[in-house]
Image (tube, rainbow, N blue to C red; front, side, top):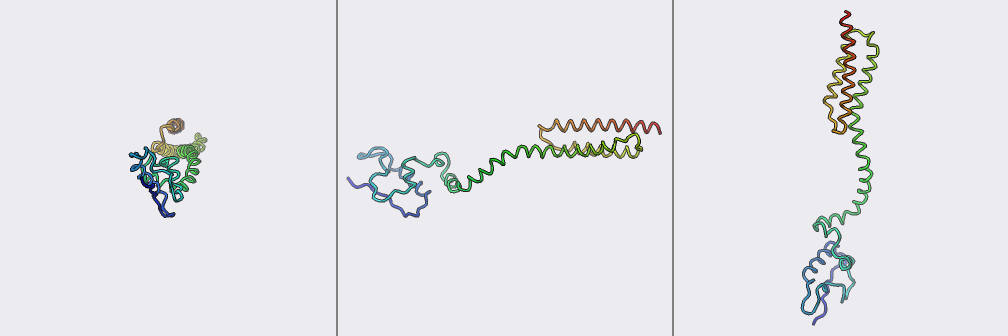
Length: 188
C-alpha cells in the first residue's frame, strides 16, 4: 500500500497540454489492477493540491467535445479560435441569405442590359416607314450585334428560358425590320 500519486504542474500550463496529459493518464491507468477498480485512477480523489479547471472538466465530462470527433490539432485550433469564429459565423449567416438573390440579380443583369439596348433600338425603329434604306440597314446591323451578344452570354440553366425569350424578341424585331426594309427596297 502506498499513497496516491499527484501530478502537479505550473499554474501557467497550457490547457491543451492538460487535455493531452489527462488523455494519456487515462489510457495508461484506467484499467484497474489488483487493489483498484477500473476507472478509479486517474481521479479527483486524494488530492493534496487544487485541481486544474481543465482536469476537473475532463473528470466530469470526459474528453472535450471537439476532440471526440476531430484530431487533436484541429480541435485545439478551433478551441483557440472560437472567440474569432463566433463573430465570423454571425456575419456569414446573413451573407449566405443575401448571396442567392445577389447571384440571381447578377445573372439577370446581363439579359436586362441587352433588353435595354433592344428597347432603344425598337424606339428608333418606331419611325421605320419614314426611315431611309441606309438607316434601316444600320438598325439591322445594331440588331445583329445585340443578337451576337445574346449568343455569347453565359447564364445558368435556370435562366436559360429568359435568354430564349429574349432571342425570340430579337427575331420578332428583326423580322419586322426586314419586312420594312424589303418593302422599301422593292419600292426603289
